[in-house]
Every structure is written in C-alpha cells, then in structure tokens.
Image 1 (tube, rainbow, N blue to C red):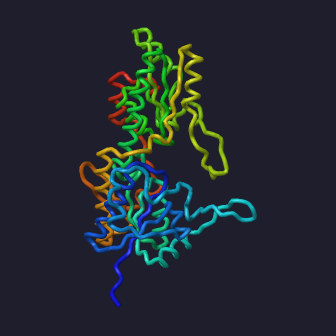
Image 2: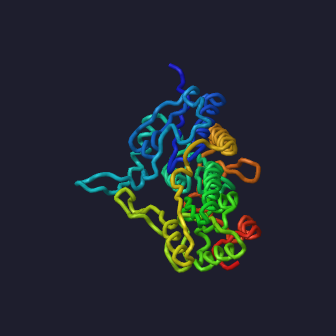
Image 3: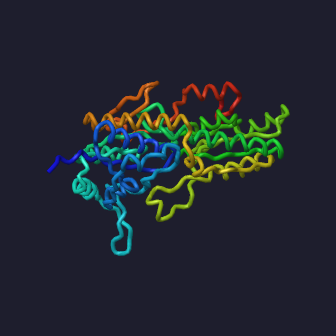
Length: 366
C-alpha cells in the first residue's frame, strides 16, 4: 500500500472580490506541480468547514479561471465557526462549532488550510490556529483595510470600477449642471473612496476617517459655481459621517445577525446638499458592482504572486502566517499580528495631500 500524498484545503471567506480565482489557481497548480500535494476546495468559506463540504481540485479544475471574477468555491461572510447560526426551537442562535470544523478536516485527511480573506476571515483563521489548525492566509478585500500588507488583491479592480463610474457620471453632471454624489463601499476605511475619487477627479471626497462638515462641502459647490463650474462630483464612502453625527444604516434584518448593513449616506447627503444650496443633486450607489467582474491585470498578477507564496509557505511547513506585499516584495507576516486589526487611512497619508493640492475638498477645514 503506497504512502498517501499530503492533502491541503483552500477556502475563500467573506465577501467575494476579483482575484480570488487567480489565487485558487496559483495555490493549486503550485502545490500539485511543485510539491506533489493534493488540494481540496472547501465550499462556501468557513461554512464548508462546519458543514463538511470538500471537493478535490485538479490541475485542470483550476485552468482557465485566472480572469474570472468571484470564486469557483463559493463564499460566505456570515459563517463564523465560533458563532455559527443554528436553528433551535424555531429560533436562530449562535453556537461554537469550531470543534466540528476541525473534526471534519481531520476526517477528510486535510493537514492544513489556505484561507483567502479579509480582516474577519484572518481573525477566524487565527482563532482556529489557536485550537491547533495549520493555516496560511492570503489577504483579500476591495477595502484594502487588512493590516500587515501594503495592498490587498481586489482593491485595484474595485478602484477601477468606481473610477470608471465617476468618469461616466461626469458627462451627465456636466450636461445637466448637477451635483452628482457617488456612494462607494468602505465601512470603516476610506481607501476605496480616496483612490477612486482621486483617479476620477472628484471635487469632494468623504471618508470614514475624516468626519465632514456639511457647510464646508456645500461651500465647495458654491465656489465652483462662482468661477463658472456648473457641476460637481462627490465620492463618498458608505461609512462616512458628518461631524457630530452617526453613520447611516439600512434597516436591520434577521440576516444581518447583529451587524446592520451600511448604506444610505449618499441619499441623505443628496437631500441635504439640495436643501442647503438649491442645486439639483442626484445620487448613484455602486454597491456590489465594485467587487464584481473581471480582475484588473494588476490584481491578476498580485493574486498569482500571493498564491505562489502561500503554496511555498505550505510546502515549507511555514504555518500561522499570511502572505503580504511590502514595497515590491512578497513576504510573510504572523497571523497573530493581523488578526483583529484594521488598516485605515492615516490623516497624514500622502494621497490626502495630493487630493488637496489639486483642489479636492475632503469636507474638512484645510
């Protein structure tokens, strides 16, 4: 009877984003061709760990997926094994099923797992590591808010989508002499709004890190009118809020599970701008368009580099770490340094200075 090959699992946790399939491809092909390690896909993120949904991934299974958005494995941003929703007595309650997840892995012969995810997924991965799981992380999020890496894959693609939307909004704003508000994602961090706003030439950029003053925002529009600019563009992160105010939430539903969805600041801002200035104002909420579709070449390359690095860490037995971009180099950082931390936009970040220097208002007194 021959010796069984090593067997590794791979999962995609949290929200989907462009580049996930590129990582799956790179990890799988590298492990198979370079280390003779079997790869099993874990379906729907950590939910698949709890529900015992694994399937083998062959070299052919991951061919031709580099340029495809989303994830062939499926994902879930609600399936935390330590707070897993189960129905008891007709009510949904949370239970710690992390033990079941680890038992399922052992029964399937999986020696370790490669986890593709953002801050929430890396926090779960670290908690599972504390219970004995061998894990390697790969940083994914369109928000670019994961600690320990300069850039996450998915961010460049999302910025490209949002910047193109702002480009298109310009034409109708100019034609109708309107103020156009574009709401993008960004619950606690404003990287996406800042990147897309600068790239799209927004006149006002509002991010969660800088509470804005509505009068300062409106004065920007009045000033532009006085110098002959009959339209203005605002790029606002969903988590931005006015000075002394609160973030805007959508209605909480049972599916929210204690984490209400953000959204609505664009609509609220539109109403307030129109009321204070008398200028016709419209809003466009990009929503999930920002993390849909084909990854940019930058994200395909970065995701592939991350995937190869993760495979090499697995091959060396270097667990409890996450692949990260530092400058031009791919390095590994301890998961314990990443878990539970978030990378927000520093108030002295160079891109904020760049925005101010080209006349963009950040909604605060400069």
